[in-house]
Length: 201
Length: 253
Image 1 (spheres, rainbow over the protein chains, first blue to last red):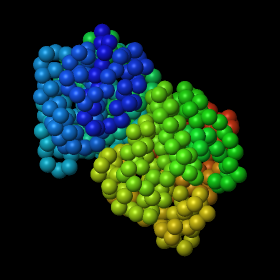
Image 2: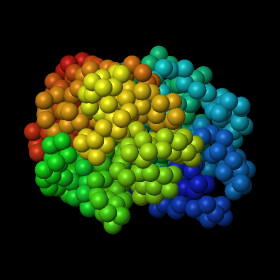
Image 3: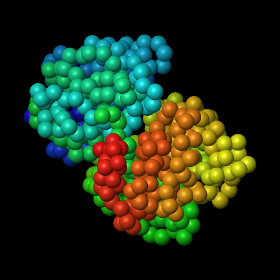
């Protein structure tokens, strides 16, 4: 059971929504850019909006890339959200050139091969019965807003479809989980997902 | 199933209170924004749009506090527009708890600001709020208006939608100033015309009066449908609109 959550503030995104949603489901939340304040937390949240390369650069300047790798290697619980999910992959191609990611998961984040972009709004996911993250909420819709995603098979992935394009909506690999959508903006279903994350670790 | 058509209540906010009139005049008090936001979210609203029509900077400050209070317990996307002219204005609103920011006159005055905001925060945060009406002097037959529809901006609405999308807005809130507040239906031709020239999501706004109107807008290609007075005055609930759209075969949450 995760009781205290650290949200890594590396200058990317609306961190308060994630903090409020996690508090709403019972977590004690600390939003900080100081890595030394995260160590005592049970779980770590990596948020992110904007461009892949900007997020990686801001994270690297804080020493966050190595910190996250270390956190994961110690098998501590981590949740990535949106671009915070994308940067857990090997690389991203947003902005033309490939940018190296944190490399926890195998895969490349690329522009969605759909016509209508951004993929913005509430979409379904095809969660498996065995998913801990989607326990009891696999049929609900979640709020997405993005133009890039992983469009290949990934271990532990839950997929979603925009137009005819299948992409990774969430990943669960051991102690690391992440979502392309915003659970903190997905109403009751999103709150339930966050609660599942807290209780399954 | 794919992404669903969003149903969005719009709250026009002045000095921290929700107001509503017809064609932006005869404004009447329609309630407390935070209470209304919670109510609509509970009814199944997919997103909320706040349009700040405060005349003073104090009024704008009051609106930002209101957004912060909404973001405390309403866990759906909040979009806020009104008076946005710069990267700094967007930054202030995002820090107050907004997920998206609408820009209107500020972008007409200086289109380059769209590029600047998209560069800094990503295009997904930026909504072009486009107040348009039928105007025979414009090539497309639709012109951009300012000052609540009372003045022509001298710009073709379809060309402007196209340019703004190219520069970097993440979606377009298309408000028909002819239909606004009339409850006689959305301007379907205008929705189609904008839909044809952009690939970003289009939010249809202005004229919703009954469930059929929402269905018509979705069929014309709107990715989201927005209304104010029908919801504020209890003529329709968000749930009724969604039930009707679902019954008509439209994908809703």
